[in-house]
Amino acid sequence: MIYLKVEIKVGLKEGITDPEGLNIKKSLKLLSFDNVENVEVKRSYVIEISGKDEKKIREDVDMMCKKLLINPVIHDYEVEMIK
Image 1: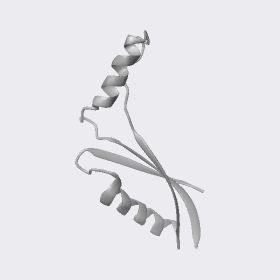
Image 2: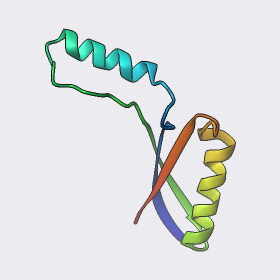
Image 3: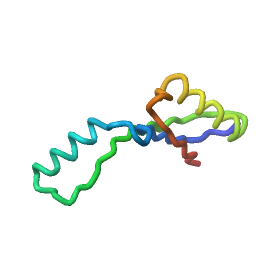
Image 4: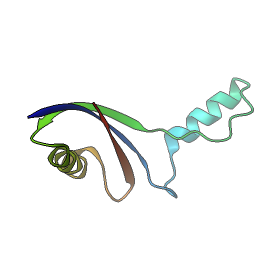
């Protein structure tokens, strides 16, 4: 049995408007940060998980994402194993 920390970063797919990012960009401009070109908001989850091997853990994490953590219509995600 192995134990890992996994970081999952969830963001909007390319082409999907990010209203939160747009509001942050607007607020930064109002604070005189005129050099801000774009803001993308991503959510990050760090999960401690155990399994028989990394492949099984990765499969479980993918299922977690698809069943709960993302909306596959609008979100992309990336997974990083932290040993």
